[in-house]
Length: 250
Image (tube, rainbow, N blue to C red; front, side):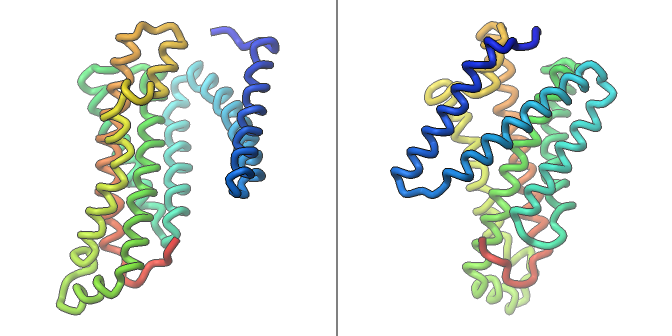
């Protein structure tokens, strides 16, 4: 694929500026003071996407670097999720949840031959699984900790009658896990009816046939459900075993 020319990038840059301006203006009209945040995140996203594009180009030319790229992605995702949970020492737990979910789902897809074991296919697919598992881990863990903080008297009641922390927090963990999976389930339930997901659109824009795009998109959607389910079970189970005092609320 050829490198985009300045003439091709110009409209993209203009669209980004206008979209950011629309977001800022709409926020001001609605009384939402997020103008600075919009500008910062757009600028940051631009820099990160360009950097990632350059790195991916290098990785695709040197497949041996793919494990290092995925390890970096997992490390950043795990740290980001652990930071959101604001519970000391949770980085190993979030790494296990995110990495375990993504590894199992990707292993199944590649193992049965649904995707060829080539970097060009496996790398972006696994990276999407890591991203989805990170979001689900954060949502489930944060919701569980918030619910525990709000109903700590109930948790202490269970502890007072001899339940272990894991047993006392298990109902909250199940509720948090189920709610964290709702976005992935809804996206899969409404695929093609409400939205055309990113992988589908990207493949179509890249010249793939609709059937080929649909095949890959289905693998992504169902792979995300599998990866995220594993992730939320791991993180809520792990938090249930380690939370022994009232968590900090978000």
